[in-house]
Amino acid sequence: MTYTELSSTNGEAQTIVDTALRSAPPTELEPGKVYGFHTSAGVKTVDLTGPEHTGTPARKLGDTVVRDAASFLAYFGKHADPDSEVYADVERLSITAVLDAHTADAARWNAHTVALKLRTTKSWQQWLHYDGKLLDQETFAEFLQDHLPELVEPDSATMLEIAQSIQGATKVDFQSGTRLQSGERQFKYVETVTAKAGQKGDLTIPETFVVGLVPFEGAEGYRLTARLKFRIESGGNLRIGYKLERPDDTLTAAFGDVVNAIGEAIEQPVMNGTPA
Image 1: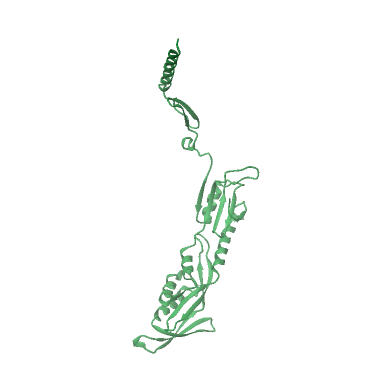
Image 2: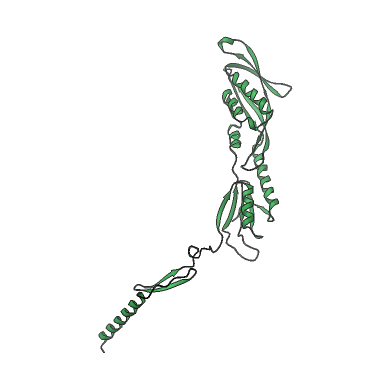
């Protein structure tokens, strides 16, 4: 047999083999295994070991974000183990748990976390927005009226009367502001309304008042002292506002209370910092 005849015979044999392989009846594949198939282009591999085929992920992973301590503790309690780690970061107002952290003897994935990322409340943001600013009387009075539930001392009824008095004295020329022995501020003014031209009056406002604010969603409330600020402009207009006493310290203390509450509810220590 010549070389040409031998090559032809081999080619025909391979064709028969390939045809037989391709015509073989299909076999049901079992998830969790790897299969190889002969094709005209070579061997084709089918991998059925992934979670999309087996229905069960190989391990837990993901970065969950919650907004209050109760939600953090619920998730942590469901997935944590004795080697889970917890970190608190006051600058980011966040507490992060690495649920699959390394053990003392073995490395783990560090890929399953839950983070409590605290958000300040709308009322906290609104009080901080005007903190230290001098407003016109109408704006200041409307702000007090919109936030009566947060006014603690004097009570909301008294502060409503004060707000209404401020609104009623918008068309006057203020002449002076005096601190009374009671700790209040008394502003003397002269009416500028035509029907009451020249009529004098007084506007008395507490020099300090206390507001009750909830810094974070789902957290406790805290008392802050607000100190009255004012300026009588050359035209007799009164600019008035408030300055909160050390609101940053209150925010830090509130965060510390959240950290302590979580630390008391779990066995793992809460470390100061952020996970790698």
